[in-house]
Structures are given as C-alpha cells and as structure tokens.
Length: 87
Image (cartoon, rainbow, N blue to C red):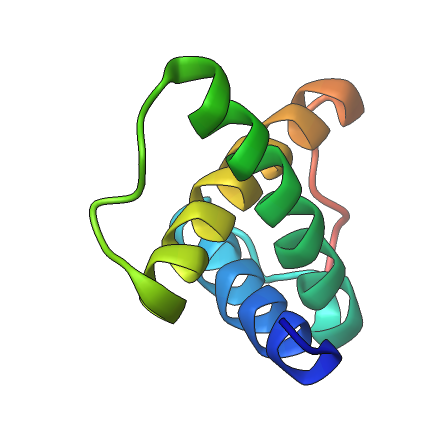
C-alpha cells in the first residue's frame, strides 16, 4: 500500500474507533496515528487468534485497523485511568 492509502485507512479506522469508544477523538493527526498503529495491532491480534478478516480488499484492511484501534484506545484508557480532561 502507498502512503496515501495508509493515511486514509488510519483516518477512517481512528475516527470510527473513537466514536465507538465514546470519545471525542484525538484530532485528525491523532486519529490517523491511532488508526495506523491500530492496523498493526489488529494484524498481530488476528494472526495470533488464527482468524482472518470477513472482507477482502481495502474494506478488510479498514476492518482490521478498526478492531486494532479499538483495542489500542481501550489499553490507552486503562493506562491513563480512563479520565477525560474537563472541557
């Protein structure tokens, strides 16, 4: 995949994961980073579990990145104590 595809996958996965996890997001750059790191976490997790994405192509990559991003946000919230800054 080229750089633009990684950025798009990261952005979509990061934004969706932030919405599902009940947050306001991490900003556009933060969501891209969460999504890209989530793609690696999701790929590792899927390989360890011995499962594959139910979809193929770009949709499958986004799905795996989304699952990884959700796991990553969950772990980050555990480490940080789950508190959100006051607005």
